[in-house]
View 1 (cartoon, rainbow, N blue to C red):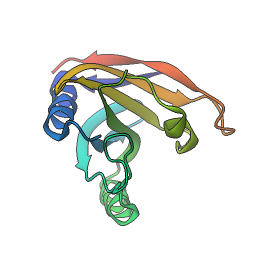
View 2 (cartoon, helix red, strand yellow):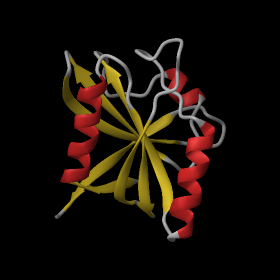
View 3 (tube, helix red, strand yellow):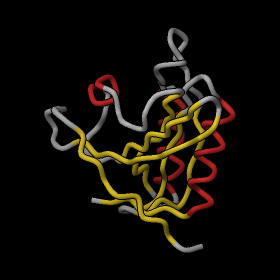
Length: 139
């Protein structure tokens, strides 16, 4: 399992994580199959603990789904940051994940993006994530 993405799109995710530090940022990975062709910033609507959790407004998500569907693309994953925590999904991330999506997790330490990893839920039972390779596509 892998996800393919161009460096300038990874740079956008890193920038988003740094700009929103010390809260979690979140966004969508849009493309086809395992190829990300666009990253779309979303608002973290978590009003309780935005430094440790993210939520995406379901109405905003539906609007983007309709838009990308119309043009023949799909939402292939979600990215979010972990301020001052490793680039590994938490149990909360696993418990709230969907099958067949890639989940990129960006570690942001002291306001500086450090590492990004990608994960996919192993099965529909929500038991565990397996790490997938991020392959950088040429510009």
